[in-house]
Image 1 (spheres, each protein chain N blue to C red):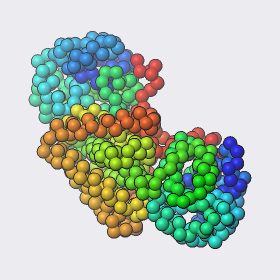
Image 2 (image 1 turned 30 degrees about the horizontal axis):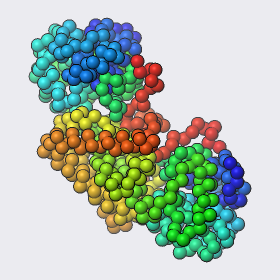
Image 3 (image 1 turned 30 degrees about the vertical axis):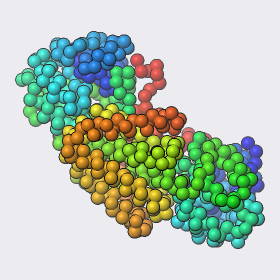
Amino acid sequence: MSKVYDRVALIGLGLIASSMAHAIRWKGLAGEVVGHAKSPESRATALEIGLVDRVCDTAAEAVAGADLVVLCVPVGAMGAIAAEIAPHLAPGATVTDVGSVKQAVVEAVGPHIPEGVHFIPGHPLAGTEHSGPRAGFATLFVNRWWLLTPLEGGDAAATARLRGFLQGMGANVDEMEVGRHDLVLAVVSHTPHLIAYTMVGVADHLRRVTQDEVIKYSASGFRDFTRIAASDPTMWRDVFLTNRDATLDILGRFTEELFMLQRAIRMGDGDMLFDYFTRTRAIRRSIIEAGQDTDAPDFGRGAPPPKDERG
Amino acid sequence: MSKVYDRVALIGLGLIASSMAHAIRWKGLAGEVVGHAKSPESRATALEIGLVDRVCDTAAEAVAGADLVVLCVPVGAMGAIAAEIAPHLAPGATVTDVGSVKQAVVEAVGPHIPEGVHFIPGHPLAGTEHSGPRAGFATLFVNRWWLLTPLEGGDAAATARLRGFLQGMGANVDEMEVGRHDLVLAVVSHTPHLIAYTMVGVADHLRRVTQDEVIKYSASGFRDFTRIAASDPTMWRDVFLTNRDATLDILGRFTEELFMLQRAIRMGDGDMLFDYFTRTRAIRRSIIEAGQDTDAPDFGRGAPPPKDERG
């Protein structure tokens, strides 16, 4: 793989940015990687582990002269950071982001982007429940989807270049319309995460009743719920606040459906339950056919590679 | 490991029974393993793959002379099978079962058990989404919990013997009161499964709207929901019908909690969401401390071992 950008600026140094830093070096995708994080602790850690070539104290300093700027901050922080960096962006540079919601990012970031800079929103469907600059690893994006939601009238060449860069890190790149992205993600990711958080909250109440049994026997279906419910609270707060309409829509459908099944349980309607459970098998089959299954279910999150590969 | 029983009779030849058959042979835990399944196809398959030493056409025939009888049929079928085998049980034999619900099994099976036969209800917290006599493998129970809910006044020696047999297959054995078992399982397994079924049902509607995107991007949180929603419909129908009260109780708490989060999303109450998501991290930490975590989340289901270990 050869160099795609001369200088990549990573704004925010959490799991995604630190994984990008490792992947960029691993594949030689950029001449230089610079980074900035708001928290002094994260900057100190990044320096200590040599995460990037240069750690900058301000975002403005980090983006100066970069031909790719990647906003890796929670969705709710995107607007402020865009306003801050806007005057310092190099002409012809590309700005992308890794937010889990796209309409809100387009609205928050778009107006700040100067003429001659290419803004191409993006979203890698990859992660773990760990966060911070030490959480990253080079293979996080391998065989994961990285969705781009290019804006109308955007520069095709800039998009193609970004696509090549993301593919260089091992990702499968797809393009999607902004609103559709937010709806699809509400179904496949946001609502399932909210449900997992909720179920863990319920168990937390009951833990007092059943002592440690809930914890002890968590392997029977509950453990994965706790894994996703341990994800970064700031990131997920912002996801739900900014993808509110789609999440509320899917949640509404979910509770209708749940009430129907709950009623069937209460009424002892075994046929209804049996038919419902039989139908859901078809979806599972489609997923196996779509090649999205492995023997290690992980909620879209690759298990970290062995320590020595982490860089 | 040496022989614990002379003859084990497996009634029902699905995933659990076929895994037991492999594990018993692997560890030499019984002199002979006989089996019966209601469906002629399952019996034919068991014969064809040499699953047990003898395949019997009736359950009565299978239990005759057995010192351990294991009922491996859906919870809803336990009562009828108990009535059928009762007159044929050997004096001093132990009868156990593998049902996911225990109070209903105690009520359905208990009254049929003759004087001098030891009935010790049980429940292995292990499984995969596959079913039938070909689905079993010898290591399914290794490091999994196998819960026993011995009845008051039961024979301690018979329980100790059964415990040794289960440990011989690699399981960690724990004893629990019947009602507590059903409540704990409603939290850690039954309700999470119902929720997963529901979420998959919602996506099934939406699939028509968003074409194949839901399937394609299922790795982002949704895929594990489909895995558990592909489990055996008969088994799960019976679980919900027979553990109705505990499941409805937990479902009630779950929807209250979900509505509270849903309202916070609607009202834009970011602080509430952040606090909630922060609290759920504590549970995750407890699970890691309890040693119930691995890097391969699997809803309590071990990935099948390599083909050549399957026996």
